View 1 (tube, rainbow, N blue to C red):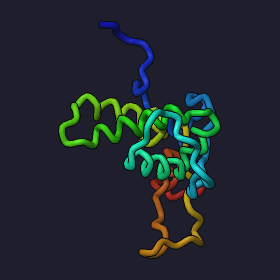
View 2: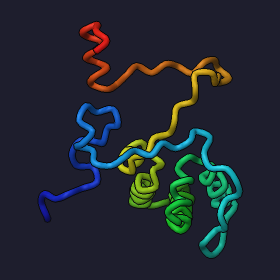
View 3: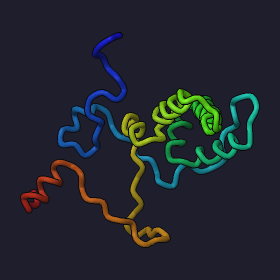
View 4: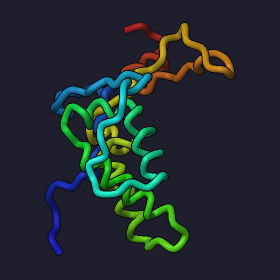
Length: 155
């Protein structure tokens, strides 16, 4: 078995709020929270089940779909949907669920996948309110903000 080398999940995850951003070479892409607008692309595979059609329509409305469209990933999304629909079946193989999770990571549908792709979904403005009330405030997570909070300073 090979040892060492780059692996997708090795080392610290990229952090857009890190003090040393130069170590995270590359910019983060901020995706609009409202997602992709418009009609879904044509289904690129042979055959289409009702479940696949439902998933296809829903996934092409996500913020990540903007990046899939930019990079022409219709086939990858369709293959993910097909495997996901298979994995949902009661007697599906366990390794199929592992493949679906890996594909979801690659497409940026999971938190680790979003970090690996350096994608962030913009936060709604403070004026926006959800049906359950105002958007909760999230405490700052950067090292600089934590040091400021501890020292009580504004620097």
